[in-house]
Image (cartoon, rainbow over all chains, first blue to last red; front, side, top):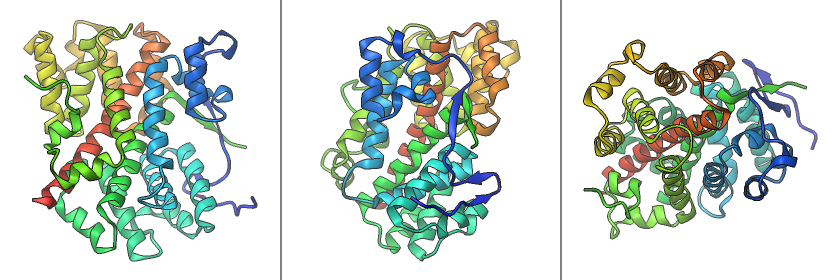
Length: 194
Length: 168
């Protein structure tokens, strides 16, 4: 797909690679359990440093991948594009350039637009092309930065812009899973730029 | 005693089986199941490598500095159950990592603190300090997954607590 390249504040929507800082599992030496967990985690996991590193602990990766895939790909509820938007915002706030690039691209593929990605990379605090989008983005920032301050009024604000209980749950999941994902990507390796 | 058969998030947030929030949450049962499964795996007493006490102390510190009082109390309770000395817990909550007898535990606590409060500073140098302190690669994977999972668990609990307070 022909994508307009966005670069802002060190973030980009280009395709990046990622390399681990410590030793990864060599696929030829992987146990049958490790192979199975890799295959269930991601179509390209067997050639990805990220999965080949995490599979040092296959049972933990297995559960993490089950949670991640159920949150990001389950049908119904919050649209997949809005889940990807929340993930991109969280990654922008946490400073995870690699995750931001992957999920910006997924958003663009699903939503067929990238105006909001430019805004999120420029300044997430003012980003949003509609009231609903701004509400999703603000909530993503606040739950990421200050989970101890989240209260009923934050949920009311989301409802005001049309989010149902099920959509709000999906949004919370999409934000929370990137508190997890960003910390792995940031502390175990680094992005490789084209 | 806590009911170990009950989902931790439902129990700590106080989500009753009869509530609308329970129905909403369990429409995404795969997520609830994998969340609980992750917790069970990360705190499996038989997991080789990092001791259960080291893992629970890292979880405690993560909840203390974020902060999240409900989860902090949960990990305090679990530390008490395995007989962790109160003085050790106090040293960690007070952030006096330099006086810890175990240099390995000191390295684990410093890494946890950085990854929770300022994830972008948890860089290559921070990671290599764990290697220098004697942690194996699988132990480092466990620690990274544990801290990252607690970051997730805290935000999930915070979001669901807010949804619950609106239901009342």
